[in-house]
Image 1 (cartoon, one colour):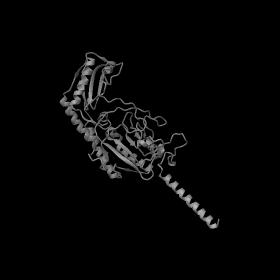
Image 2: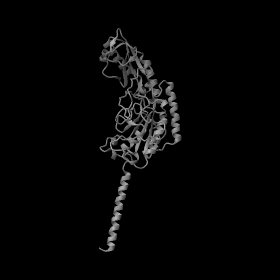
Image 3: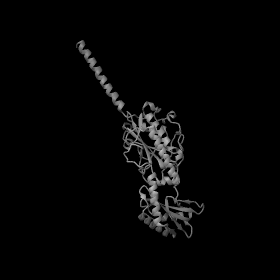
Length: 393
């Protein structure tokens, strides 16, 4: 073989090797970023990932309320209560700004466990419930009350509840076995996201309460149906105009993200796994409080056989406005969170239509939120209160 042939063969081999190397580099570059990427510093295999406190913006807790020394939080279930979809400012779903969309009534965003501590069930409240008092000739046991309860705790689409006044403490509570009660009251919620209590539902409520009272030898006192149905419609109209969910979309600029990559970055900001695949939540400051923020991505990617090979190009960051106390400054935290995730993961914050959100637009949304909070406060349905959470969840 001549020197020329040898040289050509060497050059050809080098070109082929270069092409293979380039293709490998392109393939590697296009793979989703994973939790094993070097910038995350995961530490030794099997060791807990150390939270980079330098990456956490000011105002975020370094440890979560109720967490143990490893940052774990015990799971707990929340009460469910339906409510109304609405917006701060009515707009078509496709409108790019403001990014308020009708609240869906879905369960809180989460990944594998609930995050808040035990919570007492909200008491019946004349502000949002129709209440029928039951007169008793003698005290009744909690066991008898529980045995007489109807099979379902709903009237049509509305929650139905029974409370007893404890003979020992005098407090109203959900009946419990082994205790005795001197009085009972039964209620049905005036409105929720299915609409206002109507005539048919009120009639069903009366039938259900009467059967319950007969089983206990009690006499119910029913309010006027016309007045209660009118009150339900008025409350429904208010709720429909003041129920808002605020949402940002975080989009990848270049390389996609794996679920593990997203989870580790979100965990640095205090997010924990929630109840559904592909969802994480930022716990509130107090035990039993609704999650401050929710972060969601494709649940199919989270449940994939090899999640690290799943490619995510966008995340949804949301705030259930009426569920979080104003004092928590949830919108400020939401802006900080979105900015921190975008910077750390090479992403951009946009509205639902993919348009980047400017500082001016975000300032205007913040001002609109203050007006919403004022309206809720004036109605004694302050954001984050038990009544607001029942009405708007």
